[in-house]
Image (tube, rainbow, N blue to C red; front, side, top):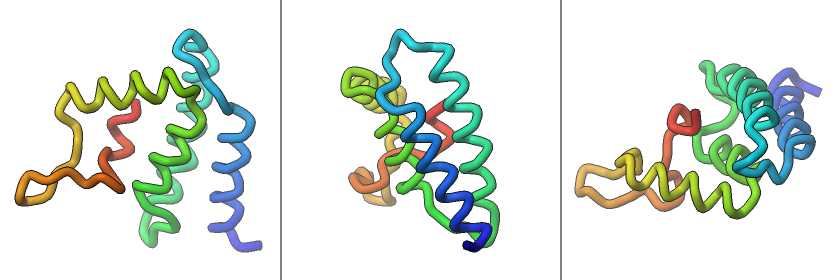
Length: 101
């Protein structure tokens, strides 16, 4: 198994371990976010082994449904939604990983 596969495997294991994080579970969220961002930054270093979209999907899937909805609303209100030069949103990759913190 390559180093890249190990890192991706670590992310998936972390997300399974910390699945269904709720809004009220601040300590668990902070631990998850710390480990997730540590591994994700390694994955994004050139040459990147994964992209922003996959990382965002993994992160958000670890949250419960209410938390996902709340996060999406907050990011939309803050204006962090990514748009192209015509002002259209990137529906498949709407946010940067840095906005998850």
